[in-house]
Length: 521
Image 1 (cartoon, one colour):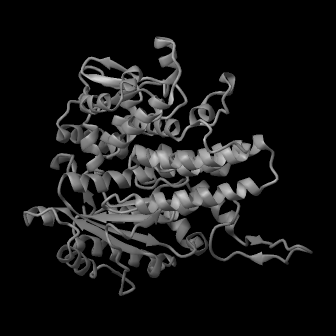
Image 2 (image 1 turned 30 degrees about the vertical axis):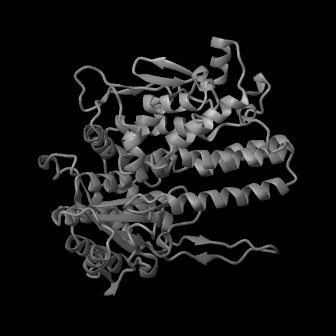
């Protein structure tokens, strides 16, 4: 009851910073969206970007009670609430339960009480002064997609999820100043920073543009970046430097780099999925339980980072291939078993395994909708950034971005998400007079079949030039397509049977394989 009252009070009076997403209604994906927006904006607006990842040591165990009560008073919490917290932590004790008995009472002198529902909120309150201090002075990242008149109110200095913190700046000098603030705060509060687990990185898009070059990863540019970041120190110790392309930092479970190099994260996710799959196959669970675990555990782990829009359809297909292989081994089916049959609903004589492409479309639709309708900083940045990405690509919002161009430019992550939804038969609707995308909605129908797009799944829009190339390979491909104004749409198996009364053949599959290769070139 105490925790619920304090949470409601803090949210109602906006006591907690908007940059803090931990232990609130938001989840980690929302914070990751904020981070990817910063990295994407730096590339599109040609601005230098400097990043500092901060690792606090045993953050929850180092809270000083007297300072916590002072902070609560300064933030404006009622006196009776402060007295309740003081009473809870005065002479607080705990016991450690061992196998044979429990220890004697152990007095708690620092840190929050483990297992207490109030502990997460108390930590957010304790670290709140640091977030406010980092935000003051305008040393954070200023979005290029926003006008300069909005920078004062919409500068991102830090992105925090509980004790996981990322500081961003436009210059190494500003980032060094932010590092000094962090050091001063931990010295005052009694917290500690593990410098060895911290990291600095960045990318000089603006410097490369001023030099008239696009080689941001050249040895000269990397040396310049590293020299600038050597000034960023905590405890007078230089922070480890990460290569902006080949050395990702795992932030909130995602291996991410300023260049959006997705290969390290994808490789780790695929290896982890295979490892979990092998353990699942050896478990004593029933077939039904194994398939359920495959969908809810392994599938969810691979789909966790999908809403960020950094995966290509080829990447999603790799995830789906692992999932299909595990499913076939669970049922002891031959490798040649049709993937369409495995994805088909049980009511239609299939196995009902959810396609990773369907999960991709659903999660993309869900989180893009939330981001565009968000009333906070995420929505304020996402809306103009999506419009900017579409304008740069050269397509109107109604027609959608050019998919082939998107595959070459990973930083257009929002436009890539919109493309996936449009190729899935979904459209972004903008009410009249709402050029800023506020009040938009995406279709609630997330998928029309349970297949994946490249293999007779969700309706796939095919560029006409690719369609004509495939007609030269085989005439059977024409049966799978339906001309629609200036585009061509790939039909699902059920639609094929409905329109032509025919079933899929090997020739059709060969044509689809050719389509997949061309779409993912």
